Amino acid sequence: MNLNLTQHFCALTMISTATLFSINASAQQIGQPWAETLEQAKGQTVYFNAWGGSDRINGYLSWAGKHLESEYGVTLEHVKIGDIAEVVSQLEAAKAVGRNKDGNVDLMWVNGENFANMKHNELTWGSFANTLPNAGLLQKSASITMDFSVPVEGLESPWGGAQLVFIYDSEVLETPPASAAELLEFVKADGRFAYPAPPVFHGTTMVKQLLHELTDDKTALTKPVDQVDFDTVTAPLWSYLDELHPHLWGKGKSWPASAENTRQMVDDGELDIALSFNPNEASAAVRNGQLPDSTRTYTFTEGTIGNTHFVTIPFNAKAKAGAMVVANFFISAEAQARKANPEYWGDPTVLDISLLDDEAKAQFASIDLGPWALPIGSGKTLPEPHASWAEALEQAWLKRYSN
Image 1: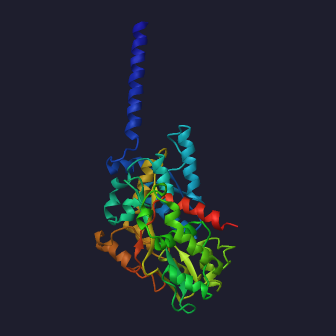
Image 2: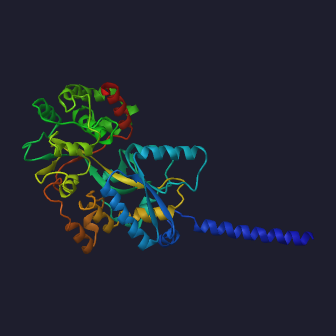
Image 3: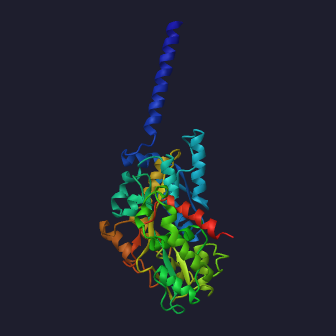
């Protein structure tokens, strides 16, 4: 009897050990052979949490989903989000209660202060991005290795480039203002301009742009905000805005709801200049009949703030293998070329075109941005301040100017 029990226990132990080994063998590991990742990804559903407020972006992701399904057997579910910070908060709550696996977010669109929060609170899975096969095609760019002055360290994979640009109708406005000083003179002379109120992203970006140009201590912007004298660094900004706001559309009492709103207001003749964080935005808008053919795009003479946006895998993602396959496809030449085309999205690529084969180069060469987008090679890109500056500036702005 005892012998049989012992044999039974040993058999169960062997089965349990074999099962555990099987589970461990099938678990996604960073740096494992890519063929294993592809095999593990088959049949997985990747819940991609990303902004859902653009028909063009939503359409692009629908196209990507069809390709991923047919080519890799991965289902891409676009979970449409208004503010990715809400997802970060959900991950913080999950970590606090010990939900370390089977999370409902597999991949997310993120950068800036949201990435900084995720990295600080260890909400990312690990340094997966540098192991993706297509990572070798990426540009050697500071904004790819540093996200708002926070080292990326492979915790997120680049997806697209961005830069603050200004859009105007050249038949209405012959010479647009090309600096903070010129902008102030422009509105004082009855030029029509406005920006969204922070914390709306484009409004915060405009405030950061003005700060970068006006402050006497630009090096302070690369440091965490609690390590500098915030009042001294920002004093020229508030002085400037105090003078600017009474001359804006809305007289500093009302504000456009979004950058898209400023674009519509230019088309309607309410504003002379719109804001965008996509250098190719005007090209897509003209093609879609949202702006006239005389539309043009420019930056300030000394440059405007630019950055890279990324995707990352949360610490408790359920479909990590599938998420890696999606992230790798997002930086393929095929996916990046389609995304860069204003007919589909118009988002600038993060790839180094010189590293691509002739067929892929031809794909990018065939993209026609027209005369409406920011001319390639023009517009100096300024670095984003450290991620901690965004909230500090937003709170200070709201304290001074919210109604």
